[in-house]
Length: 402
Image: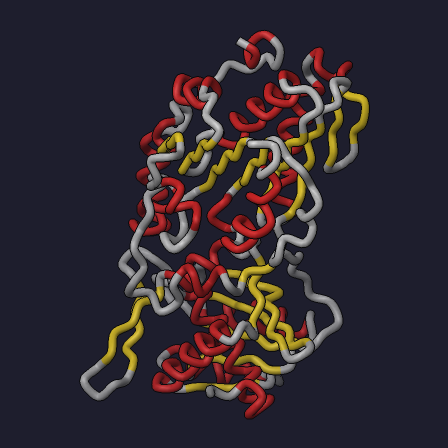
């Protein structure tokens, strides 16, 4: 009633159930584009207006993510009579005439921006991507004295996370919302996405299912430990690139990293389809020249032999590696991630998916055999391994395997 009469928004039936839920612990595991953020935004406005002098925190891994829901709240308010009840408004804070606040904040790596608040409602948006220790040590203590509410919404990710444990706990009011719940999403679109991104990623992002990744060389828990909130950008710096040529069926991929204060920071990644050797090589060369890349690492295998020759003719500082060196480059990347010597932006979704799809097995001689899941693309992950190998080759023992 509140949504239709005041906010002028008619929710779907599955959204109505969530809106009516009065539980103090609500968790929604949802696929893409089911309107989970819109639903919770409307519910948050209703909570603030019907509970005077309360504080609602919207918390996400990054400020950009938490501001997305905050913007939905502002959009609702601007087109409704509620706007006359707003007494203070900034880019991340909102106060109503009844004394209630809604505040958007980033979780960050350690939750330092969250401490000091006493809350009555905490909304964890894309909770799977917030560090668990931040949720347990910085977020949840803020409702200890108010007997407050916690709503968690997210697409699924790792099972080794508080979001999964809450979703499987009988103490939480649970909602499983695959993308097919939304009647506006056509089956043809979902079928296309299944073909494009592969079965495993499709199950995560559209069917909202938790998927085992025990065979992944870069499991989600390891990747998450290397995720940081920063805006990738190429400016003046010490850069190294990895170029993975795809050919006719796979993607070409470039990943560029910056070496800064003994830390490798991923600043750029791009994947595209193009089976023309010359055009793909020239794209890599243009990137090399535009940003002053120090060295580029490329596989010197098959078509890569002619690409390496062409790049050398263009004056690119190349590190060519053979097939047996690919194993070393992936092992080197794994070691960097385990030692927390690499930073990956939350914005690089395709790179994250590409890393997680890389699987491995051990041969009888103890060597690693790498592959990727059927229907997935490991090109960006391999390009990142090559870029880090370029750093290692240039800096020697600084980034050598322990």
